[in-house]
Image (cartoon, rainbow, N blue to C red; front, side, top):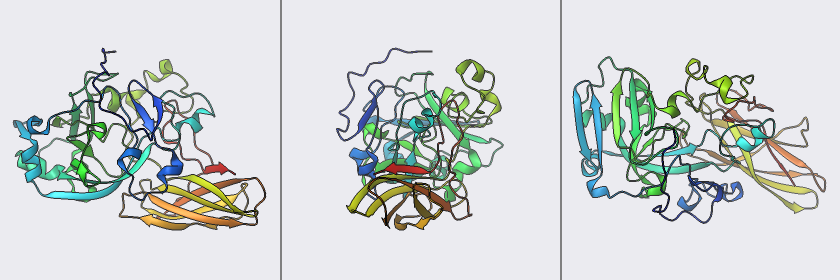
Length: 364
């Protein structure tokens, strides 16, 4: 279903992003710029939208928390009165590197390069504390916590929503926040302010709901389009929307994205030496333990130097200097996690073009 959209009242967007779609506004940072910062500056944080960006007055903004026991409305002042928690976590779109998968065979979705990721410091109230403050019985028989935003119109549904397992969401170890700050500043409208969900380690796609206004404790997953009929990895033989129609319900919603690494820049520092920089992100099996690089798909892999890594949810920045190279060539990179998993040379194709994690590559 399509709803009329009004984009005339949107706040200004960053001029440092590469626009991939104007309405809704979808844009990413040049990866060359991204890898220069451990914490991504706001003007390089990508924008992923399914409808117009709206601005809200924090003083009158409320969220509704509902469960079998009833519902409670909370204002921002109440949420901010709860203990403030700060975490560093990478926010990544499920379609990061989609254009590379699309080069194998056409896919459905906004065309993205490798800049649909941002590593930020988030601050807000723990979901567990909010639920307890709202006197929600988090030990009842319900199994899911659903997040929704009815605040702005949406392309494919009447609202934007998602859910995570209740046990996962209420566990302090998993770091799920209702965030009202990003990089020590109030969360801007562009990035979901005044309040958004932060689910460290999970894809941004439909889990980190922006402009959050409703939380529902439920026996079932969110019924929203983006939970049930999008952001799922279908088998490679499913090649069009018609084939996918009867299959969406048979496959789980995505949570963690796979182990991945990307080359951000390659610079020739002398006739036979190149200097390489990039980022890596963990999958669901532990932090990035190492990054390796090779030239022209050679048999020898060389260790890169990790220059930044902060906690279990941040990205990893790395660099490497390779000598004895020719006038032209190609650098490849791969990440290895704590469990010994190695980023694959190739990535399987899927209709939505999500979770692409083949070796990173860049020519000089």
